[in-house]
Image 1 (cartoon, one colour):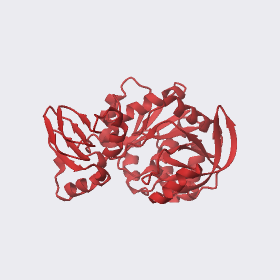
Image 2 (image 1 turned 45 degrees about the horizontal axis):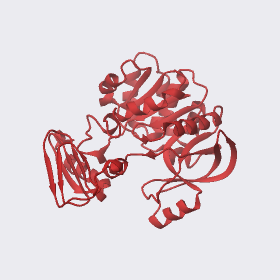
Image 3 (image 1 turned 90 degrees about the vertical axis):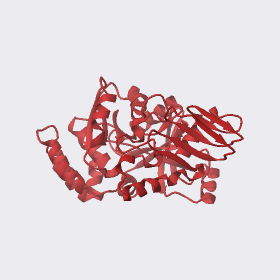
Image 4 (image 1 turned 45 degrees about the vertical axis):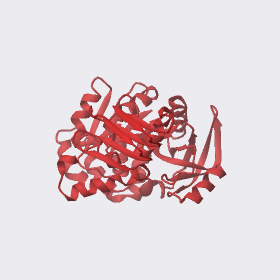
Length: 358
């Protein structure tokens, strides 16, 4: 199986720890290694010892070269971020150029997986189903009525094997309200959409040609120069004009291909905010639900997440459900439940021109 890791995100919801120069996927947020490295180490066993591909932002190329030194990884830098459809298209284009004619797995770089064995089992099953045609996705078995994720509604059962079931996809569903999410959970017919897709590169490129002609035209120009002198220049010229659109919206909601979903119960998290990281680390909290990192003191405090990223001592008195992140040049204090809104701070800093804090 050929692996494409999508590592071009900005990670604004993890400010002030995550910055433009080193966003979330290049930080050791949920493990001992940066998340992009954890992702590659996790899937390397199913790669068949062949080269993998990381599609990333141009400004992070040097950092990625350092992180993947000695690994069988090719790095492909996007001049600008253009969402997942161009990223997946570029990955499929490169895979086809290198002679891949089987399944390619397109994976976000910044997710957490508790049960690697279960994850790889589902990934391999999905890959086997789309070696020649069709598109597969992993459906994460939900554990709560989550309103922050899109959902996949399963259709008819296609096959079973290795203890796994494979279903047709009935529909991709937008993020629901709470009452709807409760219904989804109780029905057992819906899965979280983790944004993980598998297909033959020819299938991906054919679908882009059919449903996203502007993207197809740009990829055609880029494809003529892969592996040739001047490729980077062509990429710089063409890529910024590609449509900024997600693969879910641009392809998956329109495709006429057979689309399948393989359920996956693997302790997945998109680690999309400080709150979700708190939930991941809650098993190491104190008796009052405080999760702390660094030199801290908690007196009469409950449900807090304190992340000290410097040597500074942090003392908290009488706080509840508060988020504190201390870095060398910025201190964040927020209502923990509003951690999804931290991007508002980033937007304000951008408007104020405070680039040194971004």
